[in-house]
Amino acid sequence: MAFILELVLVLASLLGWWFVQDKKNHKKYPPGPLRLPILGNILQIAAQSPFPSTAFLNLSKKYGEVMYLKMGMVSAVTFNSPQSVHEILNHDKAVERTRTMLPMIEARMYAQNLGIIFSSSEPWQKMRRFTIRTLRDFGFGKAASMDVVIGEELDKFTDHLKNLMKKDGVVEVHGLFDLTLVNVLWRLVTGVNYAMDDERILELLKLSNEMIQNTKFSFDSSATFPFLWHLFPSWSGKNLQMKIIKALHKYCRDTAEYNRKHCDYKNNPQCYVDVFLQKIDETANDPETEYTDDQLVLCLLDLFQAGAETSSKTMSFAMLYMLTHQDIQQKVQKELDEVVGKGKEVTMEEKGRLPYTQAAVLECLRYSVVLPFPPARQASDDFYFHDYFIKKGTVIMPNLEAVHFDEALWGDPRNFRPERFLKKDMTIDSKLASNLVQFGGGKRVCLGQNLAESTVFLYFANILSKFQLVKVAGDPEPTTVPEQGITYSPQPFRVLFKSRA
Image (cartoon, rainbow, N blue to C red):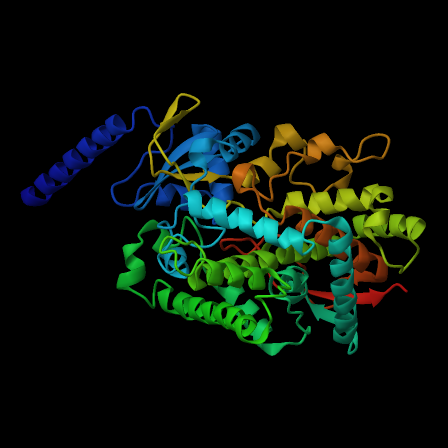
């Protein structure tokens, strides 16, 4: 008994010493909850909410809008107010990406500084500039060109949806928009336009979704204790993730090889891949070149996943919100009927005359928070933020939920209410809308923002113009509580689509 008591006293003394030292070592750091040895703040975060963004927001009410957290082996600073989020997104010392937070990301990048999303420094700047410039040459970002592409894909999607409706009108929404939204961008990237029932691409999209939904930034064992990913490959999800990564790598490499062998890319480039292949040939003798086959594979993978993921999830959430808010659906359709005509095609030319429809789309973007944290950044150097010290290498986590659900900014953020974006004269409150950060911000802002905004608006407006969304009799009541992963997505639900034509 005496031995046990002595052991408890020793452990208590060591724990007390550890707390004192930890506080001393982080004296100038942002405030945060008491950190435990090894675990850090994992238990406090988990006790707040299963969703990290909500947990951080709850903790910030006690510790402040800028918090220092330790999640296993990861040191992070989270930003949990509109002002701090906007400021850190534009901070020059918080631009670099961290690949080591998730070993899966490192493996996805061949353990090299490749691609557009997770790369850093000069290679990232060079690939981003090249990608924007090249895609723009093929019409990316040009309103007239993109409207044509979106319109053609929308027609295909509408026919596909009608085919799915043939039996009883009931359609499973999960994954419904993945392929059609990939096609919008993929035509410019690869020159390929997939049929809506292409089995190979549908399987790849399914695998991509699995990888994203099975990875959770703060509660994922491989994020908090990266070594576990290697020690326990089955339990940690490594085996599944590597299987998916290899399949996606192969698809992107096969895509590049097809253009190399079957397209006249040297003399008549028709897409992004062709121009990239030209650059590979031109710089083949340069040992320092950024233009390699691996680089092309990663750029393609980034564009493929980015093109499918956020816009597709946003559209799925939009369908869910219209299903659960029938009154708002009816208001959108009333405006569409009056301005465009019942069941008629909506184009970007009508957008300015559809303020309520615009407001509904903006509210879908605000309420869904598909990407609660932009791809993780890290401090490129020691710096101070509002008198708080942030050490080089610290993970930077702007909490976008803190912006989209800030009570001071929105008044009643937990209510789905498109009217908040309308001024008294029924025009869009552009100043309020500018607070939305679903595409990130600063130098790392999503390069496809304009395309995504146009695509979501046109798909949303045209679906509501042509179809009524009704709850399926006998199905459970749809929930707006999302499934979490790197991105948030709706829980599976079905819709009874009824033609309005």
